[in-house]
Image (cartoon, rainbow, N blue to C red; front, top):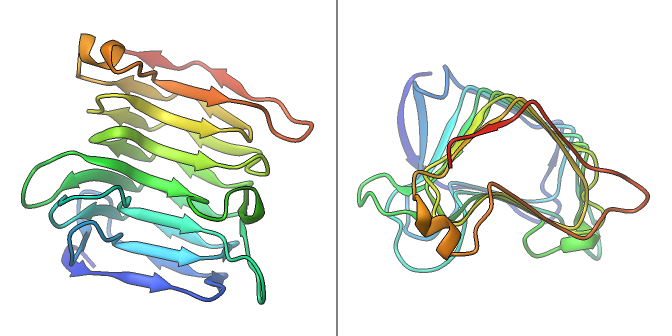
Length: 212
């Protein structure tokens, strides 16, 4: 339901499959980390799960680089990667809810597992990412393929908007507003930063605009 919820959700040791989490809308249901530099939602492994109508942010930014949402893969025994998840009408903020400071990253996929965490076929529909000093959304690994962004917006960042370390992506009709002016260029920042390619795949950017 609508409201502000101070909590930390962590799904360790293989995470979840078929997990569902639904709020009343990204401007009505606010999930706020109960501790500085701790994700409000974290998991080790996430398959075929859905998230809708939710806002994710830190309570207080504090020190460190942990994102507000940390979607990672589990390696080794009982391994489960990240694959086939859908995010609709969600907001991800790196800003501290109470101290107002920007953080390193708002949403990070396969932060630790990297290539072994897979990180493929995830879809984001009309989602907003904001207030990062490094990247509002960061996806890591050569197996992070076919991740798609439909509409939505990325704003209020001082370096990168979307940051793809290898893998592949498709971005459609998304808006970008760094709001940092020349500071973004001084920081060697980009609205979309991509390095390396995925395994036998391509990336595409279509119908996007920038006010950075």
